[in-house]
Length: 138
Image 1 (cartoon, rainbow, N blue to C red):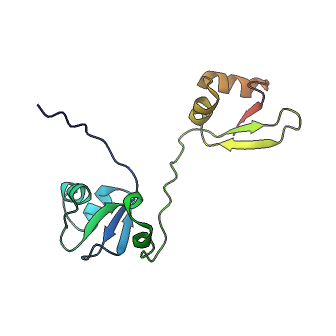
Image 2: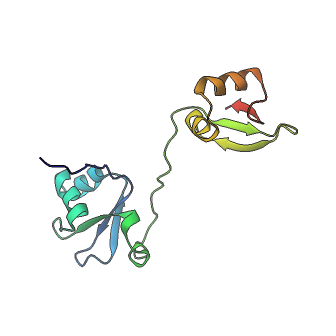
Image 3: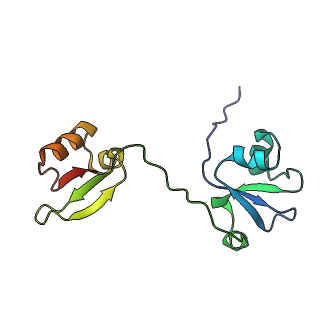
């Protein structure tokens, strides 16, 4: 029985040249890299895992590359900031009501301040001081 644990790797995918020393392109998804070189996704995945070439290119996770190899990329590195599907939540100073921080989602507030999503919505709607702050949905 195979006891290996499968883990999903996420992050930018770097396409390297045939010498495996220069980044020629960057993709947000492995399937985008596969479409670019008109190959099946499994070949990109194997190239990342095993260091095997796909045609005349190699593929690697951007975060796994050495800085000197990253610096060979000419162009703009794509933004990887996760998109929030929900509403932002502002954390307000209890005295001045000035914005201390804007959180991109209720989920972030829940995780950071150990409160339920319903509590976040309730204290924002009722303008109630909670956990030392006022909260506002935006």
